[in-house]
Amino acid sequence: MRATTIHAPGDIRFEDVPDPRIEQPTDAIVKVVAGCICGSDLWPYRGENDVTAGSTIGHECVGVVEEVGSDVSTTKVGDFVIVPFCHCDNTCAHCRAGMQSACVNLGVTQSGQGEYARVTQADGSLVATDGMPDESLIPSLLALTDVMATGWHAAVAAGVRPGHTVVVVGDGAVGLSGVLAAAQMGAERVIAMSRHEPRQEIARAFGATHVVAERGKEGEARIADLTDGVGADAVLECVGTDGAMKTAFTVARPGSTVGFVGVPHGVELPVRRMFQKNVGLAGGMAPVRRYLPDLLDRVLSGAIDPGKVFDLTLPMAESAEGYKAMDERRAIKVLLHP
Ligand SMILES: [Zn+2]
Ligand SMILES: [Zn+2]
Image 1 (cartoon, rainbow, N blue to C red):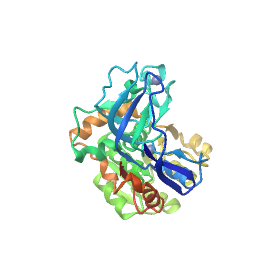
Image 2 (image 1 turned 30 degrees about the vertical axis):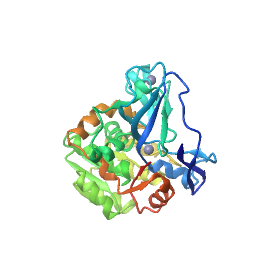
Image 3 (image 1 turned 135 degrees about the horizontal axis):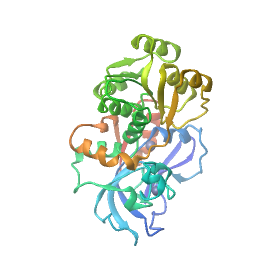
Image 4 (image 1 turned 90 degrees about the vertical axis):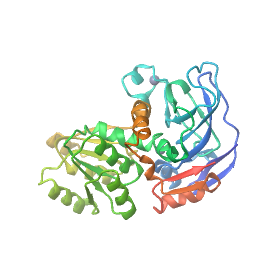
């Protein structure tokens, strides 16, 4: 098959690689209908994570089941499925506790920007739609494989409740999804921190009541003003840098929780502030499968339209351009068609 590969920082190719095949009886092979580029794919692209030259990249896709292993019983060939980026058996102690991203049989989609992807633990992971979904729904279904579920997880971890004032740090696809999640959960005020006009627009469409364009100390001061010096009832940290984490803790009111879902890179926690102000930290890698049935219902009923985060669609053969566009912040999130 052909798939997107990474050879070195900045070196993305679309080329022939071995077909993924059934390796375990619990596996399935999915023919990718749409894949996409994730903000976390930019870490290796920018050389901030190690790269194994020639490895496939891409962990987000939806598609049609092509083949299943001998132990797979509920997933059928021909099903249109949403593939959570982290695969789980959905039966072990961690899965049953709602922490599917820590499954004892955890797997991760390896070639979501290619023609086919292997899913380990097919029955526990895949959620099928009732027949082939309408073309117009594909972007929103694709968003459920990671970013929407991850933004949702940030809001759950931060304990967002009806009536809350919520601050979302980060205006990437996950941060925007966090805005949507907080609004769905009944937050009265959702303050999105974003400097970029197109992202501000989506944040407003997703339910942001305020946009703070300033960053760092100035942004923190704006939020202090907006909350009468009290701070936010819940904060979603959707970046993963030290600066974003510092801002999150600075704007969080005493007794609140920061929900973090940005993959941490060089973060040092302000433990003294956390102690003095009783501000907690919760979250981590999203247990996508836990939220999928509910989020799928919300997409199908039209309650949410998380596919709005895709502002560029390219053929997979041009995935290198997609990476460039996201790296240069010309695109928020890139959808790829095989
Ligand atoms: Zn992702
Ligand atoms: Zn499990």
